[in-house]
Length: 122
Length: 108
Image (cartoon, rainbow over the protein chains, first blue to last red):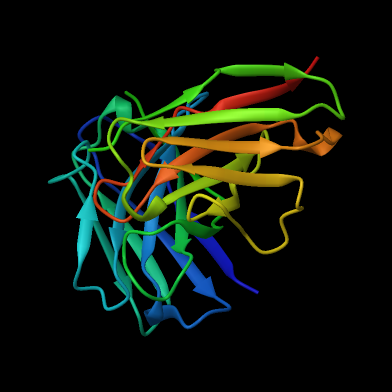
């Protein structure tokens, strides 16, 4: 059974930084692309970033490009999201999500972490 | 970027009724690369359908997806009490991945 357990997040001032992590188990970690998806309070889902299984291919939403960095540690089965220059509009519940198939990168998602809240406020 | 527009915003239906949820894309979705998710309050999204019409593992057959090109539909043949939730469509296959704004199916 797939498990994605998230950590990190919290309250940060505008302009600050935060690092999210997602520990994975239950699947062949380096065979699957992984993603970050966020949901602002009372709003819908917004894709943030994707990293392929090898870790050498990354994709970002325009809203976070140049500020956020997605990375993975295939030895420790962990996904990360480094968030810099945070803005109030980055306030959301952040989910890690596993791509549903071992082939490809930009796919649909079949497993989700529990979500971790990020609040950007002074 | 493919923009997905879901309608209606809210569907008010009774248990046992049929629900028809629409997802319209701003341009043709190649390969039928469209998925549907269900999200209940305080829960993570749950995959229902991918490839426009393929039901995910463990999803009851009252859920069905259809469509191609720019028009896609999720149908719930007979609403069960546990089906009242928000439903999102998502396009995949190229960057950026995008979601529709969601449709809330509420009990009348």
